[in-house]
Image (cartoon, rainbow, N blue to C red; front, side, top):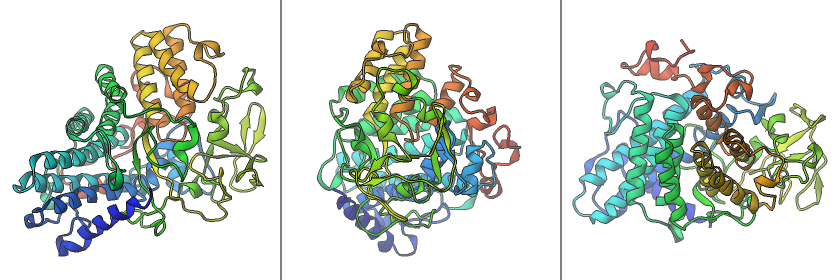
Amino acid sequence: MKQRLILLLAIVFVVAYGCNEDDLVQLDPNRVVPESFFETEGQLESTVLSVYAPLRSGNLVGRLYWFLHDLSDDAHAGTSALFPVGQQVNNCQQTPTAGEIGGMWSTLYLMIHRANTAIEGIEGNTTVDESIKNSLLGEVRFLRGWAYNELATLYGGAPIYLQRVSNPESSLPRSPRSEVFAQAQADLQFAADNLPDSRDGDNLGRTTRGAAFGILARSFMQSNNLPAAKTAAMAVVNSNQYSLNENFFDSFTEENDFTGESLFEVVYAPIGDYNWNAGSGDGTNAKSVRAQEYGPAWRNVTPSSNIINAFENEINGDAFTDPRLAQTVIFEGDSYANGTETLSINANGPMVDYHGTEVFVNWYKYCVYYARNPGGYYTTTTNHVIQRYADILLLLAEIEARDGNLDAARGYVNQVRDRVGIPNIEDSRIPNGSQSEVIMAVMHEREVELASEQVRGRDLKRWHEAGLINMADFKSCFSEKDLLFPIPLQELITNPNINQEDQNVGYN
């Protein structure tokens, strides 16, 4: 299946080398794409696929997306090998000058500017069938909506560009965070109304109606609109397009791409290698470096005591040990590579407390231990799942719990628990009698089910903002400024409509 990416990359490269000086792949706000390009269906499709390419870049899902989300939570610990900005985020010390924080911001806007160029070209076309154009517009607006949702989640208020920018004077001021979420939600709703239910063949990996509803549900939860989130999440359930994988771990292996649990994933393929030009938006990150960054050789990020002690465990007096523990992390001395090797960790600390014992532990998800010893350098073809069906079920569980529908909430949690063969929440030691207890039980289930999937940090922050928790109880260095990253210094310098007075609280 990974060979399908070759076609996507080939189309992106046609765009890259077929538009002369004004090609879409090199698009920035100061460059204009000739309208004469948007004539055929193939040309329109090429512009759409160019919007996907930055997702694979090191500034987004290729690297910084997981670092900056994960290191904001209580489940990840940076080691001595972690790059300085990662350590700063992990310790709540990020600053506006951080290049990585600026890099994510700029690459999200690269997606947005490419999307706006594609939208104008598609809308202006008079030869392609309207149904095809609407589907392509849905695809582009999904990607733009995803980018705006990330901006609102991570940075708060941000400029909202809905048209192609042709000169520096077109820079816009910050819009309030609520308006950035609203734009993301409008884009995602349009996508849900116009995308197909499913993809097949060479189109696997391109977004669908279910993906749009899934990210829309996530966005509404982040803006604390529970009724709208429930409507979007139920649309995913009622589509009958998704189900939990029989095996929990199948979502994180090289062999299993586009499973029935996956709503949206970023595609990697067995061609080329990882492109270390972090800001590249040309789609040349053919492979992922996640297994190295979180794995045994580089060990830049390790599990914290919080996450390894969160799983139900016989060591802690539970009647069983949650099997997801061994499929999420791996301890020194554990066997791996189909039982042929034993894990030895002797570099890049730290040791962490595991129910009273100091241990070395690594992440297991995405790290290919299950099949092989990755050695000193191993890039993988494992697709990176942005959202899966378990997240939707647990969002519904949270909504029902917060609305007081406790049996319905338990039912959704139990679907997720049943998949891994552990007792229903009612038969566990996790308190789940009162409404507040069920809400906390759902939070626990999201913590262990979705560990190291760029969900925990956004959950903690939105729960804090909703008054459900005090995030300082989960991450000791937290203060109110840490709800958002700073607006990058580069934006303050280059955008004449944003200045220091517009900076997020705590970064002045």
